[in-house]
Length: 293
Image (cartoon, rainbow, N blue to C red; front, side, top):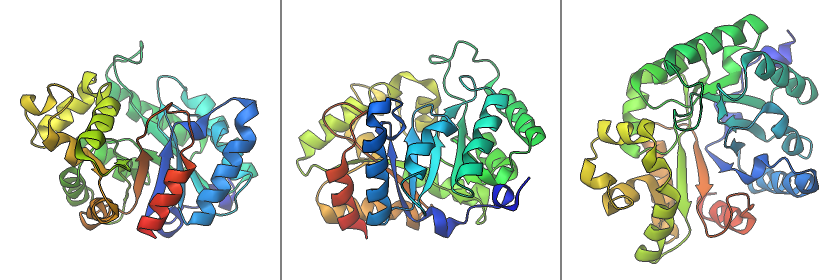
């Protein structure tokens, strides 16, 4: 194992702010140049990390790494059911050999509704991590999509840290207390660049609809204090306002930074907008950079 492969990626390199996007993992060869250009701009704007949304694989990071020299790129998340540990390990080493020290392997257990093999997911994740250990993939170069206490603690022992998806400031504070100060804590946060409350919440509810059908998320919402009433009809205003940053520049900045104040090291910002999730909302990323940097 090379020093480049074995070294950890520092919190400073990951940065305080990153971008989460399904569009960045697009596998269409015709869009490779567009994705590379977007990655170069993200680096220039000051974002520390680009997160490849959906069940992406290490190879999906290459178009972004090829056009940048500092940007960290991570999968968020690679499903342990869709990509086996052997293939995942091979992909990790291929990418790290080409771009040493700039790739994070983000892993998650996905959902029963989305994976036919889904069975005893926590046990499967632990086994997967042991297989990665055996292949030589270092724990400090992988992160886990953790929500519940067991997986959060696993992320402190068997990975660099946690990348919770679709969660709140309160959950972030609880996770930090549970994990301690050293592990990485990098929650995702949806951002709606809309000042009209009705319009902003409508866009957020449209985005949230699928997730409200997935018990892993609804169980977590209940665990952190939301009720069945909050989960009905697309989500209560209270739920929406806890999960999404929207409003004017000051309100969005305050919401994003409240995650950092609660203990997050990094916030992965997902722009929620009209149109396809495969779009690259570059104008919105520029606006967000202007708000935050």
